[in-house]
Amino acid sequence: MSEKILVTRSSMPSFEEYAEMIKPLWESHWLTNMGQLHKEFEKSLKEYLGVDGISLMVNGHMSLEMALTAMKLPEGSEVITTPFTFISTTHAIVRNGFKPVFCDIKMSDYTIDENKMEALVTEKTAAILPVHVYGQICAVDQIRQIADKYNLKVIYDAAHAFGVTCDGKGVGCFGDASTFSFHATKVFHSIEGGAVTFHNPDLYRTLYNLKNFGIRSEEVVAEVGANAKMNEFSAAMGICNLRHIEQEIAKRRKVVEKYRELLRGQEGIRLLDEQEGVKSNYAYFPILIDETRFPKTRNQVYTELREQNIFARKYFYPLTSDQACFRNRYRDVDLTNARYVSDRILVLPLYADLELENVEKIVECILR
Ligand SMILES: *Cc1c(COP(=O)(O)O)cnc(C)c1O
Image 1 (cartoon, rainbow, N blue to C red):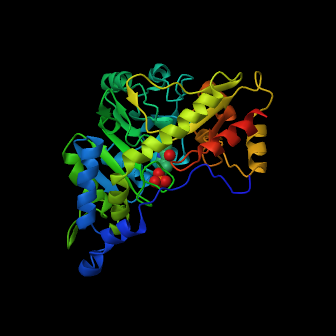
Image 2 (cartoon, helix red, strand yellow):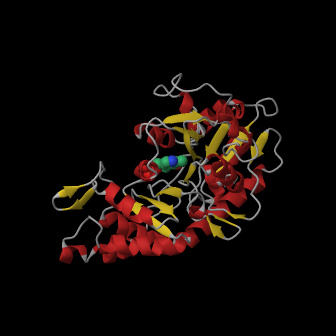
Image 3 (cartoon, helix red, strand yellow):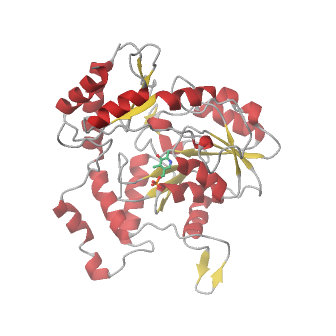
């Protein structure tokens, strides 16, 4: 193919729509520090996500860091998490001074295996940090039960799950907190951005203070904080994109349906089943290539696609627990499923304006 097809492509509002949104900033000169657009964006997101509380952040990573800090866990705590995720999830734990305890995933949906979790609980375990990977919802009820039994906090990394609902309930309603990423490469974006959602109304103040250096007043800083504030230009982009999110998801759905139609039943290629009661956001289209039943390995397919200017991603490979910064540092647990999936998974290009003709070409190239 002559044009490059990347794994994702950022959606944008029209230039006029965005220009209109940022115009008042030339009057107010209020560019960041919780301005008017920040307030507006926070309010409309809260409604869209159907959550009790929300705090905007500068990006998804800081949303994770701030959410973990806000739980005020004891020093040296252990956090049970998945290694089958973007590196940010594990970094957020370690940068908070906690120990990640990696738990295996399920073959059914690639989320953390709730049945292997309890065996990992020790006196030091203080929280669970699962990921709704590819927008697949974790076993939220069972995880809640385990958390209640051992008095643990639950923070969901919902970076992949913007707009997903489960039996009509917004994904941001689960756990003590959930975090989102509005990075340009995600289903919904504010250029860079993120948010923490929660029930406990006290968390609004806690997070507000943490993202603003712990400052209480002109002369008082009450705790160690960071700078994780979202600026007005990002909030403006978020407000514009939120107006179009339903069309965006509908267009992605068409692409996913095409992929499914062309790949369904293909020997050696495993697609993820849609979960019951879950309204998807069609954020990713992962395929698992079983080299014992398909003539090529994942790496071969990846390379052949590249040669055709099609850029799929080995997402997530390697596991975060196998990265140089974390390898051999933490408890060695059995990660059989996570390793199996990580070695065979391939995320195919998917964005709202990906032409169905190109989906056909991508699938042809895979099956050739
Ligand atoms: C994108 C992503 C993040 C980080 O979000 P940023 O906005 O890029 O900082 C964290 N976790 C997961 C699972 C992600 O996909």
